[in-house]
Image (cartoon, rainbow, N blue to C red; front, side, top):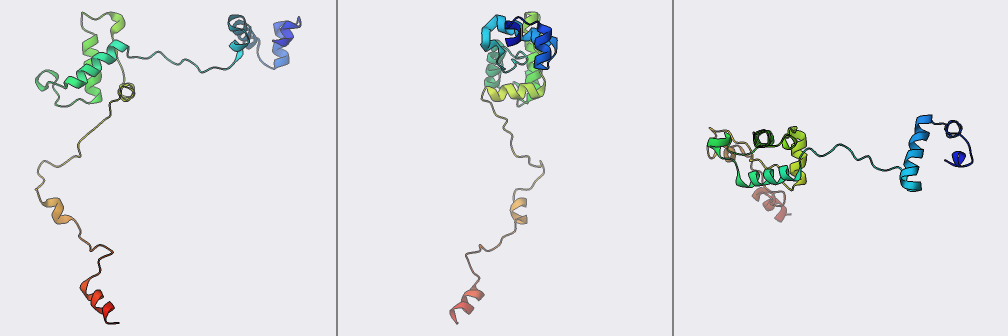
Length: 158
């Protein structure tokens, strides 16, 4: 930028800065728009969020209500079920085309975590598992601090 202010051309500034002419043009546009602060590196804005605030409110309300098995076909919400619900809810005839939403499981999971929801699941259990089966297979060892009678007797005779 200093070379340009000294009366040089953009081509000369590009050669001095060891950059392309397009980069110098971008610098000039940023400088003209925001002054010296426009030349600072800033974080890229990234893609626009897939879910709007209206989508998030509807999703939170649906999660709080819970699924109706006869209507939704599930007894608990999974991320893929919520994604399907979003698609069906916002693709209906009453929805505006801008309100339609299609999100991946990963994106929906990230959004749910940002909204404060966590994935909770019960520990799986076989349907035919007997009541006392696990207790019968557990190994029972004496705690380390509790010595057996034989070792206590030999220790006291010494």
